[in-house]
Length: 192
Image (cartoon, rainbow, N blue to C red; front, side, top):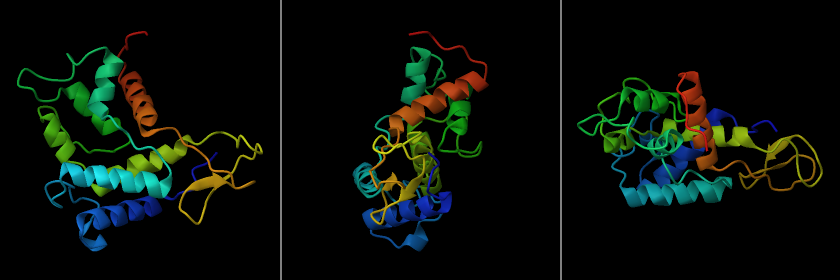
């Protein structure tokens, strides 16, 4: 099924959720404001934000991060970090190709993993959340309809019968994105 959400609408929902959790105005949550440095988010704020988004949208945001998924895809973390503990060029390129949509200015080789996490913005989370809705089932399991719509609750449902639709999990979407990035880079992945 086609994603029923426009990217801008998801970004508005993400901004509203962040404003609620951080006790700030939606206007302060700009697309390029980093959640940690610019907006002062702490780890518990991000846990609460994740819970709010999952509850509101009915999706499972990732429990892991891109670097964890990359280590899993490569069979270990040896290729992810340089001798100082910064991320490698391979890790930086996979992050830039991820659904989060980091730019070269935001993520580059040599950054520490905590700096990568601190570079996240509302736009990154909106892009990733939108991508999750690109992974809806092909057809409704209840009526076989192939069109999705947004219910008044904000969750996605079948346009034919109104049944709730379940998208792939954030971890599944992230893992698929990591595999696709590695394939696009011509990087062989271990089998099994």
